[in-house]
Length: 377
Image (cartoon, rainbow, N blue to C red; front, side, top):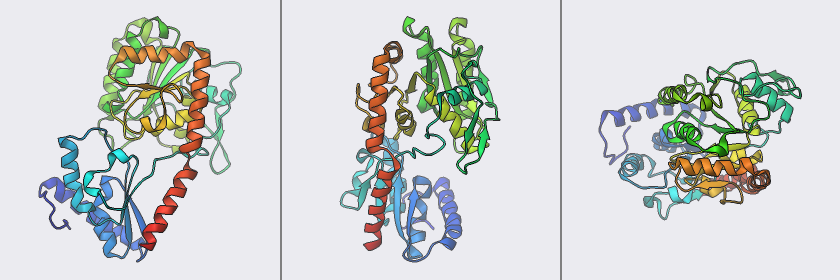
């Protein structure tokens, strides 16, 4: 059912309304009057009125946003607003992302967080991390390596069994080589190709380092249709690199069949990095940055979106004012590689920053307070 006053009558809007109505029929079997329901992001905005008619109180949680307002954002809000007008409360990750038409309404700003005990973030012995990297082809084996095994969430022992689905690598990085890592989706806005180009064009400051661009299996993320094209572009760029650069650059698509195994590989990759990059051209909040900071890694990241909320330049990491400036990215990345004291100081500051403000206990307390207020309203 299209809400009254909805301006769009195009095929896309009709399809959106039909999908939301079908999803509502399934969801309503589990919803009772008085329940508080949180809907996440634009995909679920069309469920608000359906749930309210069933007697539920509805919170809409928006995880996405942009620093700049333009015609695209205005059209997006014009489409979403009629679906969202009657929600009981709204939650955003950043105050800057709240649209003006919500002035005077119950809006909460709750920053995202990470679970420090999840497979992606829990402590991992250096020997295990190194063994996992060797197992997936991102590090040459070393004598100190243990087996590529880990403890699963249910207490059983797991072993890394699946190989990356796609790899571009001419040789294994030596066990003692500093590793620069970016773990991201194969999305144009994550600028994996830009990281690779910057690394290739860097001067002598990065000659001793290796680069690993790590993302998901391009066939394993159904809601990211551009991933295959972006990975193919990065792979084509890798093949065109000069030999002296190509032997130090590595691309890997991680298997997605076992979510816990995938998370443990990401954990190992981030913990093994000398520097973690997040050179996004645009960013919502950037929890991959939070994850790397929690692991005590020096992070170099774009000064956009929620990344600016997470770190102060020089204290918790290095912020790039212009992520398109490849020369600046390479120069800034070389600093913690060359200066162990700087790297350790940034890593310690980063972990402290996450402990103080970006773990899930803080978020749970904020959400509990919001749910209580909405239930009592």
